[in-house]
Length: 68
Image (cartoon, rainbow, N blue to C red; front, side, top):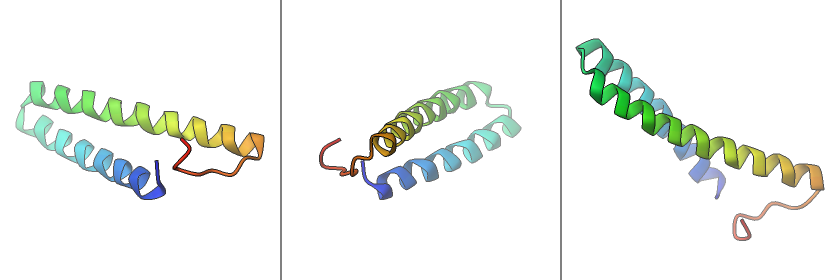
């Protein structure tokens, strides 16, 4: 996954969190819950890539998005 894709995921997370807060203010709890699930999925994906990046740095390997 490239740097740009990871940054896009982070942006999507911020947008989803903002929209979720708007839904909660309007009282649409069910939709807000669904967005929380989406946010959790994005977080999980970002954490996995963080872990992969740390392992690569520990091993002293060169990161290439084509390999992973």
